[in-house]
Image 1 (cartoon, rainbow over the protein chains, first blue to last red):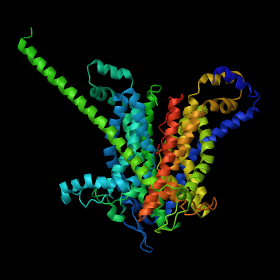
Image 2: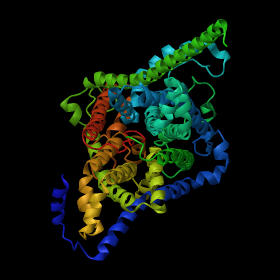
Image 3: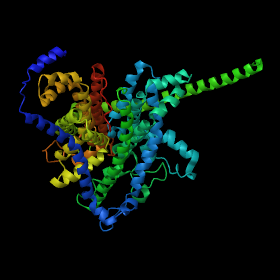
Image 4: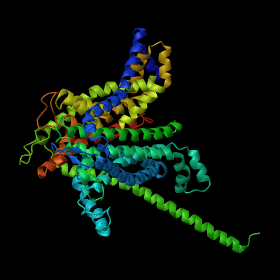
Length: 331
Length: 305
């Protein structure tokens, strides 16, 4: 719409649009809507703390360090250590696979790809993030798991056998390794999209200076792009970690779900459990007011604190980089 | 004076050096391209599997009937799940859209201060949050308080998930409206709220719609929070204070059943869900790319942002 037409349409707005209080009310209303986010975060803390209070009273800090998990009445005992560890192990493996691939994708999209390929390729990568988690789980359970078992797990197992702790156990496909690989696929779009954005924010003068010295593409990337965007790339990776830590459905469907001390992640080819998967798995079995439910809510509280910390660090890192080059960022 | 031998020596080193660098460059380019292929293959595989396995299950009965008894030959359909997903999206939007848009207005128009930055920061943090935590929070807050699993609890959880997405896309699209529009309107003496609601919002409506659709696509596929809030049901909705079903939840349940026809139905339900989510995502991106939406950050995607 042209500006002229805009002014005409403006004329239909009465100049005396309400008393001077309307402006104030509008601002207050907007501020309240914005504050809702803070209120929700506060409410999450309050509710999770109060909901998990019984288990903290019974187990104390042993809830964090113990590995017993027994919901049988009379012998109830809850320790979340295997699941906390399982969360970090799966997320760590996912990062180890996902981050290098994501940085590679970001490099291709920001430095190498011909102009006409950039937009469609970015779209395709971003669509990976749009696929619901439960569909990753379904695909992992009935398709990907079998390929992984036959082509990766069995050879690795045959090669290293039960001598190595990491590859011991007969590969079945429902294990920590499968869950981690699918997690890696799920965090790739998050990390690569943000990394690409950060790399695009590196001023071209940096690249030109390196090209002028006769650097190859890879050298330009290593000497001019990486140092300039390092903290942002770390932030992007941590954002991916935040996603991997909280991911529920795909992990629940693929990790094999063991409980108690058996869930300690020792071998890649053994079933495990993460904080989110045990919540999803055992929720239906726990009575609404019992200690079992309280333990699950307690795990929710731990996950909340972990995720809050990770996400806050990541956002500080990413925001600092993107802000310092404001104006250079292209969507 | 350099001798001929020295010059030959120098050339040798130069060729070796440059040659090695060019080879490394080629290798890196190859590896990087391989990364892109590695990422695209799973997407291709997912789409192919969902379409081939899912299309066999599709029929009018499948889309409208209630699920059959577990393990029986008559597998029934996923009618309640489709209904539940639509109800949940509608209900969540009733909370998420107005609050999110107002929050976005605050961040864009009044948020250039310490408070605004704080809100923006926590908003971004919440956007990335594990949705299962939001689910268990909604369980403690709504389900335990009201005493049963309900549409309300699901609505509450999903509205929290869509809120940060709408807030941020609203903010970004309002900021794209040229400052001259505001100046012109203020010069005419129009009150600030009228300038925002009648002029700036109408200019930014593409971005707003984009954000809302992305948020809808996102919550349509959410499963984890629904386990704790709506529980799931094999009947059509009986009321807002009772359990209902939803597509992602139904896919999860079907996939864990040891019957072939249940799994086939799971693929069918996955096809319905993925068609819904991807068509929204692709549609939105197509519109945004064609129109002037350049500069609008679309990082907020289907998954965890």
